[in-house]
Length: 329
Image (cartoon, rainbow, N blue to C red; front, side, top):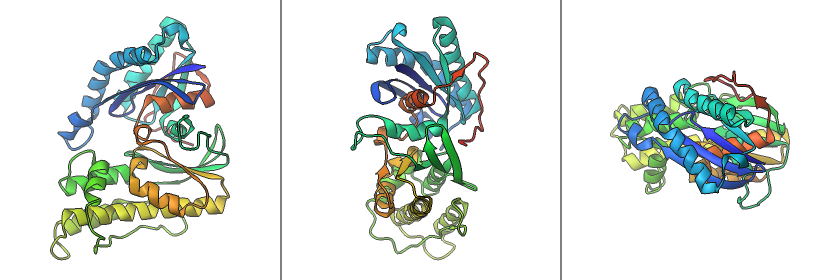
């Protein structure tokens, strides 16, 4: 079964064709990161306009890369939420139009759930999909969620961010430090050149909850940058201390939940899953095997959308609408 996945939830216009939920035939992404970098973050209206310009060329390139025609496509999967409403509308309406014109089934996909399915793509180190039950952690610019997944389609959210998502905190702290956008790669890059930081920033543990909170950490960095507690340390040291605090909270929470719930695997996904320090620390602390997609599949892409649709296939009608605040469970 060959599924065309279309992703336009934020600032990547992406298309991919995946066979049987695991084999990638094509993967095309048109990123807007450079454009939004001028503004220090994603501008929704600009993102929507760029999707309008890019979506059809991306779909054409996706088919060409796979060597497929429309007769080879068994279904079209599209992200319907969560995300930016204008951006989502572009992808959903294009997918509906193609499904109607070509007579191809349409599948609605939850963006957050799709991130988890980047771990099902063949080509991972193990070449085997994660075993159930598993703990899934989605860590991105807009979301930080922890879910229990007993099988395909059976998800229960046990933890979430109470304020800033981890990726959002990276972006905001990078802006405070003058490192540009997107913040995650910039902070990881400069932190790698820092010695062991003398600066220790606070962690919000929130008792026994699986929830996370990063607004206090972000405020603590602001106080450091302003010199309110003495001369500011070098930018690299502040970046390293911030990254250390985020990674410590995420890895500790995930490891404790995995042990408590008796899962067989931990699945990490989302843009922040590309962070090498998070991968390393969580791998060390997790009581069960850790699954992480290659960095190229951590950020938004059509591959994860098509893979998710294969395992969660449920036809959507042409009355499909977007859901900007769609929860994962």
